[in-house]
Length: 65
Image (tube, rainbow, N blue to C red; front, top):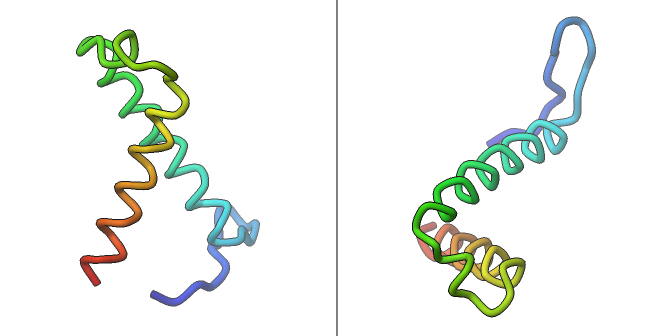
């Protein structure tokens, strides 16, 4: 993957900014999916649960290369 600037309505945006917005959107969808399952209420610390999901996902992506 090549990291070059993205032209967004005439403004050049760093690719990291776009990735941050996409990551926020995915995290928001995962959080919405966790609430009906009540896994947040069963966890000791909801932020640590979200962090564990992020770390596990990152490990799987690195190992899949």
